[in-house]
Image (cartoon, rainbow, N blue to C red; front, side, top):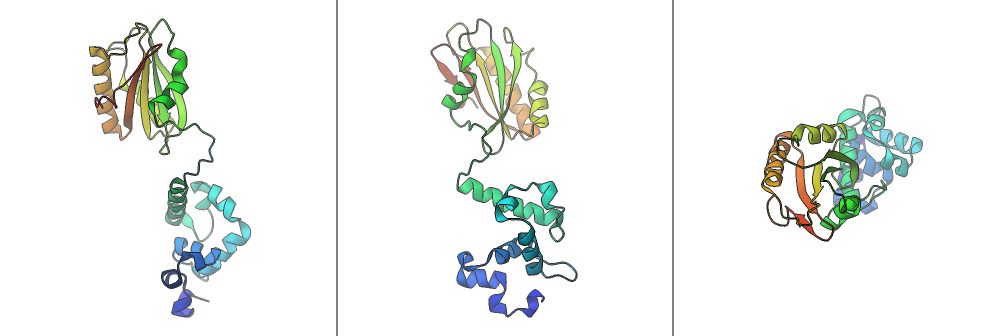
Length: 222
């Protein structure tokens, strides 16, 4: 049976509008996301077949590569399904990846606090995905920092390799004074500008000492 052969009031979209999404069956909800059928099969038939083969939980765990291979879904519809799933996960704050969340200065310090007592400066980049989950951490430089030694390309090379959405910069001041130097300011400016070109946000640059912390973001320097 084609969608147009179903009484209008019982078609998935119309039913959702009139009765609300909570009153739709699983296959009707999935049919709305898929949108259209294929030759010889209605969108409802496709949705039923998919749900017979894959559980709802399995569908939520599937990646683009797998979804796009299901007959009747394809490339564009896989994107719609993944986008809707991700929006729901974020709204419900579902964090099922097991990756640490980095949203505050304290979160950053928890990840790199071991450099507080180092006798040399350590410059670290923390790479985050769109959920602010830590996906990679890289020591970029060890030694006395100056603007000629820290290159944006080193930072963004790793960002691209790990599909990072944003980066937090961190380094320590063995002197105990977290006040940024002229080189710190210049390095940060260059990296932020490069990030704008690359489409990767530099969320903060944090300087830590044994007892103090300085955040460029909190001081409105980023």
